[in-house]
Image 1 (cartoon, one colour):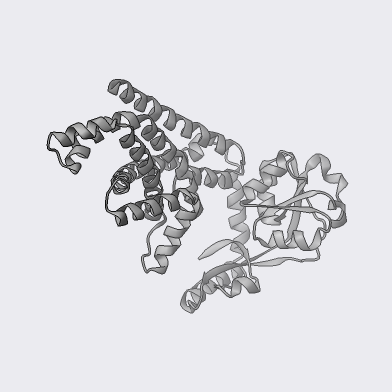
Image 2: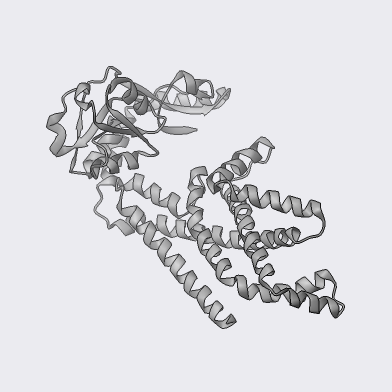
Length: 376
């Protein structure tokens, strides 16, 4: 199910089933409090930059009714509010429920009603197409919620939780710890998979069998020529088409291993090529086979040459795991944006995320530097 302040539209109805409405949202605008007096109706926003969550009802309303305004679509409500707060955009179109929570926590902002032609929009739950059994159960719950007037009570509880005076870390520290642990796990799995795959690909590129060399070249060029975000989507949804329903974590780990393998392959290949050809000739003249020469003579010397670049790739893996939040994989950036939404603080959680990333990469860089020093 998707329970996310969703409005029913004909386009969405082609893909999903909709429940009964469980509440109604009015579309309003959020502006800086000291600028609020300038805006009375939709016409006053002509020439202004107005933000809205991407592919949302609010974006559609902004484009349809704010004539002359420059509409700025953004990924999350957190991003929209942050850009209004810091003056990057002049206003934002939001639902009154979401906007109310943000404005309560951000004194510099204010809600105004520009009197959109679109009235209150019913908010529904989205369900898998054709799943009438689940739809009926959800509708029964919604009927009870409406009959017993439970929604208002839930909103009151939410505001009380939001306004608790506990320290920021005591409320949200577990999110950051969990995210950091998963990020390190992603990096560890990526290092293992990337090193094994990269070594195989590097040896394939040096092979005299043209088909192996061709496969390795195509693989490396394709992976290096496409973003990790696209690869994560391909693994997550592509394997679903093939009947493999993998979790976001497993899909993310596979995508990162595949991506890292291509870069490690080039690092190892350049390291192997850096070993003087005389070493290979001497080994072959002593009777070693091509494989034995690579294993016992060339590869041990190449490791020393490639260690700095390989270490840098390991550090990069920690940072690149942040991309996996797009498929819902739990890691540090995913948990950071979760805290953004829960705390209604758009900036502070990301600063904590940045410091944790720095701490992890700095410690790893120092450890890799120590190993490099010992090798030298």
